[in-house]
Image 1 (tube, rainbow, N blue to C red):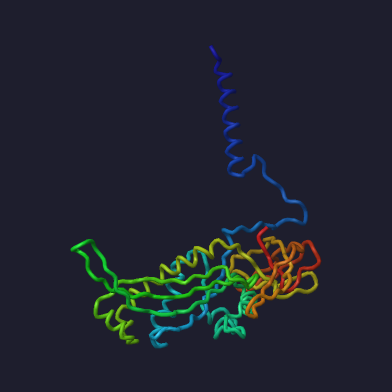
Image 2 (spheres, helix red, strand yellow):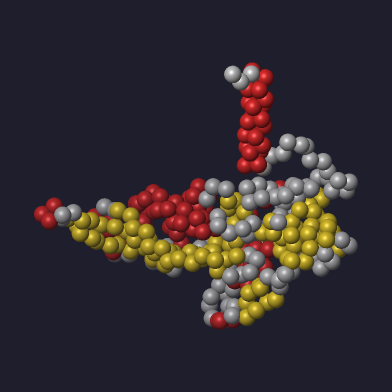
Length: 313
């Protein structure tokens, strides 16, 4: 017969094995790690404790509806619906970016396209990770046959035709582009007014339109959430740098980031220019955090300067 003492030793051994394996899986330790001199208060940020700040610029109205109706139905509700559809992302209104380029009429190249290089520069200065732009191309009446055989009937819809673009502030490249055609069911008299291109008619079913904007926002934000967080150095002098992100992006003192060179500027088609990020140049540690700015010291490297990009290590 096995003695109680031996059973106790076996149970203790099994417990220690299970406990050790659990700690390995959870990333804990049986011992408390100490901090070496001069390296205390250093923390490693992650994608979970940093907030992406995205500028939602004013959309263009290329449809037949009046600018007043466009502002009331689309522009004002666009932000509210996108904000609800994008949990975990800090969506910024144009006028709250603190940047004249992002809050006004967006600059364009000679070919008439949005100048992604200029809005990327503005995005960096304002501490944005990305910039959303777009246009309402049209809102039109559509009739479709619905149902089976003798139950088939004609149904009226309003089709919202929009173009959404999302630009990366680090490179100026377009990371998302989609032509969205969202259909919403409307009454026959609303359809008739829409076909007659009566601008005021869209006010009758504006609630249905704003509901559709939520679905559009979900489609856009599903792409943005896959992009990594990035920070931007806007000035540097004497071993210290200033970053265009602060408490509003979740930065805290002690966080350490890798710094990358701003890279080369390359030219593309239709007069567009882009940033091509360079190599890693060093590491920086956040020393002081303010609402929309942060100060950092350079830990390693000698070429961390204005224009450098900060990334999670």
